[in-house]
Amino acid sequence: MKRNLLLALVGMTGFATAAHSLTITVWDFKSGDPVVRAYIDEVEKAFEAAHPGVDIKHVFQPHDPYYNILGTAISAETGPDIAMLHGGTQTRARANAFVPLNDKVGDIQSEIAGWDAFTAEDGTIVAVP
Image (cartoon, rainbow, N blue to C red):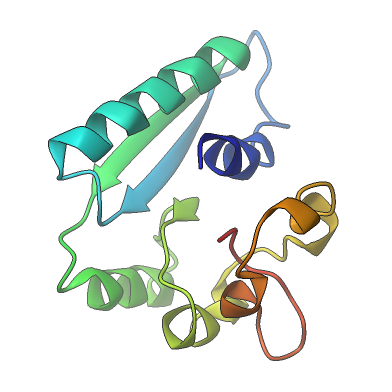
């Protein structure tokens, strides 16, 4: 999972330079759990150390209303840069709101199961399982 999160974050770092910083906003519905939060903190710290000029703003969203909150943010074009998703219908229903990842995940596709649940009907991969 650590590699998957890092992969997702790496794709967003092209705009940071020493003179300019980039903030990546990440939403999830799991980091309210202290064990998960500790893991996420470790991954974010390692990512920021490896990518100077990139800061992660992590926002926990409650699980039950998560997709309502995400849908509202997508409609208002104020959503996060990276969002945690359940596979299947929840992902496919919002697929057009996400950046296609097909050309960014080729080196890990054979190592991870579950791609179908995070792939739109047209074959566009929108999230990493």
